[in-house]
Length: 488
Image 1 (spheres, rainbow, N blue to C red):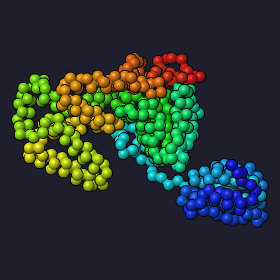
Image 2 (cartoon, one colour):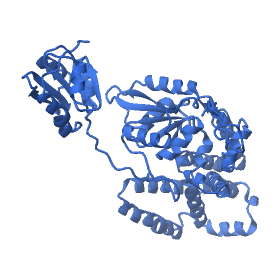
Image 3 (cartoon, rainbow, N blue to C red):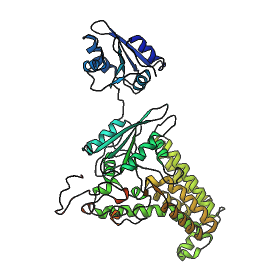
Image 4 (cartoon, helix red, strand yellow):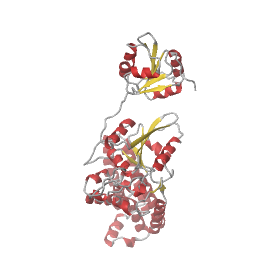
């Protein structure tokens, strides 16, 4: 690796030999004593006004510096970094920081003058809250880190800065609370990120794939959130956060299945209301999975499990239907997925019209034409709506629902029970970073049950979850307990 010398023009040529694109510009000027100076920067990524005010103006009115330290003292930029190679200079320039080279000064100096063009901090579109904070992460990694820092104002909040992507050079930050998070888990996550060898990392979902302990798992490999308050709470429990520059979604590890049934709203309402909400979400997932399957199995194999009056209603509605119950629900499931995919990708006003067409025109017309029964439409509609009680599990639930319909149409109720047993075995045997996915139910951790599918009052949550192996288990001192001076 060739080092930068003292000649300004040669240094500029060395940098431009790497960065040959036309949007890499060179701003040449002279210092107060006539020495040649140049600033190499990326057009659109560097704030040109600050470049002139904080870099060019001080150098124009002063003798040229002879060392990096002297130059750093002259510039008005609060963030400077010494660069000693063309490759290092190119990396800084592509990040939006201009590199200044001066005749007679060995090396170069990068100034933190990146032009930040970002959207405003606002409530995440998929995580509305009636009560509680309404801030959400954006696509800038430093802003996201500052939002968490604003809630956890402690020197124990640590961020490890890493990079991944041969072509993208994406910045990745691993956040954790020192002395609370399990140090082995932090080290393992950092090692996995450092081993990423791919062209581009464009979103946090890319990183999640590399962090997965089971790459082919049906369930997501990491927790996700767009809310700083939720992430701060998970860090305080002993989890590790992963930020990816360019993504508003932060990852949390280790991931437990029960956290998808928890919501930020639960911690701003009474424990009774939170418990009811979590129960509704849990039964919503069960309804989404099992209702279509048992409907098919009941028609084909065990009609006796249905009430007689309901059986008569179904028998009347399915007369003349050309499809079998399994194919009928499979057809409706296909139509449902097509409507969902189309509504996501269409403009919102067109999507509204599409939902009306799908619900009224297609559904009503299909029943009148005798293609599907009204009871099947009700079953599939209730199943589809119930899945969205837990939005983070919609993709997994959709796949499992299809599998349950197939086995129910093939071997009936026995197939549904067999697939349930296989699914439970899969979940029980799954773990990530030493934490079982079904914890605290399997294995049973009684202390962690206080904040699982039901929520205990705040004063009962005085210990951090045992599942994460936190180095400091005490979260709250109450009822005259001695103050913990050394751990929190």
